[in-house]
Image 1 (cartoon, rainbow, N blue to C red):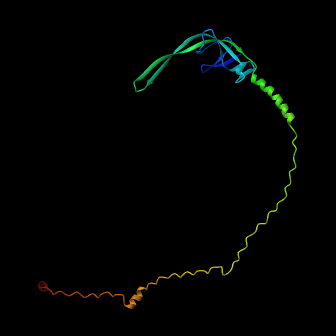
Image 2: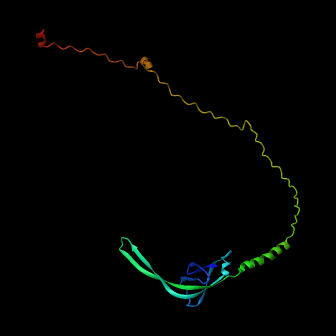
Image 3: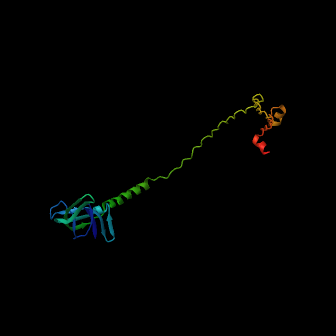
Length: 206
């Protein structure tokens, strides 16, 4: 049989007659203390939660002492910062003297409370009587009036609006017509070049 207790912010597995080291407990040496229980296992019987709260674990304080030194070293690179300190945690040695188990109280209450509730429910149940549904008189809805058809008359029709015909651009007269009218100019006649008189040197050569 063993139990799991909570003390000093930690969980610890203990048995009857075992010696355990826990965080410092404010109690003088030789005094008995009770530790809160989270879980109990005894063969096939397992208790946890509210059922385990009914179990009592009693321990006796044996001694108070300081634990081993823990080195605390602080360092920041490229800053020239180094700091080393030591720490020894205060601890307590306890002897587990008794693990007293008891029947879970809440479970027994739940079983007793269920029986009368079931009996009362059976006694108060009555067969449901179905009432015939009341027939409502049929209400006739008035026929919806259809809108009168519109009479199409020739007078109502609007006369079609005639669009004015687009004006076509005047056709250009060909060049032959201009020639007939005398508008085409004739090229000027070239005059023959005047002959230059022969020089004395040319006459002598002849």
